[in-house]
Every structure is written in structure tokens, then in C-alpha cells.
Amino acid sequence: MTPGHTHSHGGRAPATNASRVVLFGLTIALLLVTLLGLFALWPNPDARPERTALLGPGVEVLSVEVTALSSGEDPTMPRTAEALGHSAGISGETVQVEIPPEVAADGVRVGDKLKVLSIEEAGDDAPYYYFDHERGLPLGVLFVLYLVLVALVARGSGLRAMLGLGTGVAIVVWFMMPAILAGEHPVLVALVAGSAMIFPCVYFAHGISVRTTTAVLGTFGGIAITVLAVLAAGRPTGMTGTEGEAAKFLATGYPQMSLSAVFLAGVIISGLGALNDVTITQASSVWELRAAMPTASRWTVFTSAMRIGKDHIASTVYTLAYAYIGSALPTLLYASTLDRSLLGTLTTGEIAAEVFRTLIASIGLVLAIPLTTGIATLLAASRASSGRRAMRDGAGWRTMRDGAGWRVLRGGAGRRAEQDRRLRRLDER
Image 1 (cartoon, rainbow, N blue to C red):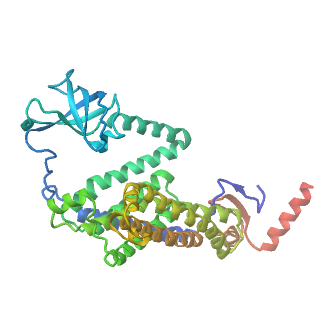
Image 2 (cartoon, helix red, strand yellow):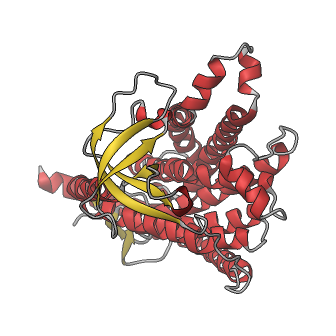
Image 3 (cartoon, rainbow, N blue to C red):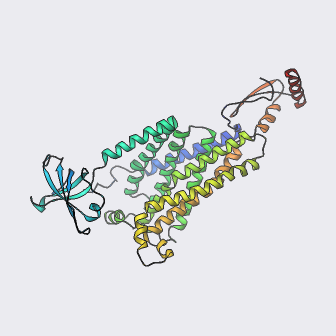
């Protein structure tokens, strides 16, 4: 191995020891604060409200399979279907099921498996009533197919990302929702839950390194920006969170709960995935650029990475917007039938909520990109500066390992090292 010659291992730029200490110190501090938040807000099992019965007394949910469907000339009237019972009590029997017109129009076919209601007070001759579709098996098959594709294409990293996703969902189910129902402030709970979700999502998928830890800090910064934007804009924009049947149920069953705060908490969590995506991409971009430009200044690396970030901002903004447009399409179609201006439509009810969610998430994304890029640029040390530090460390051969590989440098005067390099080049000729 000759002086000045580098064997690359992965093309990663190094980070200085001091920057590593600062970076991991901040990350450990954030982890400890998150754990303290989880401990302080974790709901007491006795404080959790009892679950409300889904159905009243004398009402039972049964499973059937549609065997025939009436023609139904009037699309505004319910249709009747013949179905084969699969539940205890009606197994093997053919029963009549009444299906509402909005479901029967395009949602029920022969062979579909349905959940139906049996109402005891209606009498023995009364039909069963449509309740829902049976979705467990097809969704399970779709999930297994998704896992197989992830394993084939992304291999281990994809499966580790799924593990991180599962951990995040567990945090929502076991901590976030019970804590809100137990009376904790929804925005504070969402902040702690989002912080707790960052660590498994990033580290399970991408491993523990300076690069991924930089993305963690950038994501925390993006969450902080999102929370501030939510708190500043929520009340002036009139985000009440009262739209939809679920909000009406919560208002009745939990009158002490702030529905506007629940909505704002949902906005914080909804932007977390896209936020993590942009931060990990920007951190990786900086490290790759530093490896490709080992002697460039930090400002050069920052501006180069921000050119990538600008494209990422543009693509992510319309990705979020299209995702929310798709989820709110029925509401948009309904609004388009009303005699109302475009501005009036966008500022009304559920549509305004989607617009607010898109804007807040986009603000967090836009500001997280330069923040993450700046942190990564400061941490990714140039090879030239690393070499100069090694040359100043005294006489003798010094072996220094960094993120780009092993480099052997001759200590002492730089002139002596340059003379040795020239002699070796002459020998190679």
C-alpha cells in the first residue's frame, strides 16, 4: 500500500471523532427525553375507558356468502340477496339479506362473503341486514404478497423496514391511542409517539451509523417544525376536527376530549413517513457527494446536495398533495356538484382539513431538507482535512481508518511524503 493511495470501502465520507461524539450525544439525549415522555404519559390501565359495545342487546353479527342477487330496477331502493349461512345457527341455510342501495350498486357480487346483522326484535321472518364485507382473507393474502415482494426486491433492508413499521404501529396502538383516550393532551402525545417511532423506523431499516443518525436529527427537527406550525395555524384556520361520523361518536362518548387537538395530532403523525424519507435521502446524498468530492469545501457540498434537495422538495410536495386528493376524492366529487366557487370549496369542512394537512406536512418537509443537509455537511469531514490532521500527528507511519477505507500516511514533513510518492511513481514506470 503506497502513501496517498486509498482503497474505497463503500464510498462513504468520514466523520471526525468530535462530530461523532456531539452527534451521538444529542441522539442519546433525544432518546432519553423520548423515553421519559413515554414513561410520563403512558396510560394507567385503570384510567383507560371501558370499550363501548359495538351492538345493542339482541343483535348478532353472522357470516354469509352471496349466492344470488336480485336485479333491483330502482337504484335508490335496497336490494335483496340470497346468501348461504356460514355462522353457527344458520350454517348451510339459505337466508335473505337486505343490502342498502349505495352498497348494492357496485359493491356486492355473487360469491362475496359478507357480515350481516341478525336482530332478534325484528322477528323470525325478517331478513338479515348488511353490515360489512369479510376482508380478513384477501387482505391477509395481499399482505403476504407484499412481504414476498419486499423480500425479493429489497431483501434484508426491506424486511427490517417492515419490522420498523410494525414497531411504529405498535406504538400508535399501545401508547398513542390509549393515552389520548385516557385524557392526555393529543398534541403532546403525538409528539412523544412520533419521536418514539423515529428510532426503530430509521435504525431498523438503515442500520446505526453517522449517516442514519444525521437523518434522525433532521427528522426530529422536521417534527419540531411541524408541531410549531400545527400549533400556530390550527386555531386561525378553524380546524375543529368535527367532520365525520367518528368525530361525532368521540364528541358524544368523550366530551372532555378536544377534537381539534386530536385532528392536529393526526396531522403530526401523517407527515412522519415522508419526513423520514427526505431526511435519510439528503443525509445519504451529502455523504456520497463528500466521497466523490473529497477536497471540496463544505459550502460546495451543501449547495450540491441542496440541488438534489430542491428536486426532492418538488416531487414530495405533489406526492403528498396527490395522496390526500385521492383519499378525499368522494368528498371532492360531492363538493363539485354544489354551486360554490373553487375557493369556497377548498375552505369548507373536510376539504379544508385535507388542504391544511397537506400544507403543514409540506412546510415540515421543505424546512427539514436544508436542516438535514446542513447537519450532514458539517459532520462529513473532507479527506483532505483528515489527511492534514494525520500528517500533524507526529513522525512515523500512521494508519487511519475512516468511512472511505484505510489510508497510510507518512508522518513528519509533507515534503518528505511528496518525495516518497514521486520516487515510487518513477519505480512503477
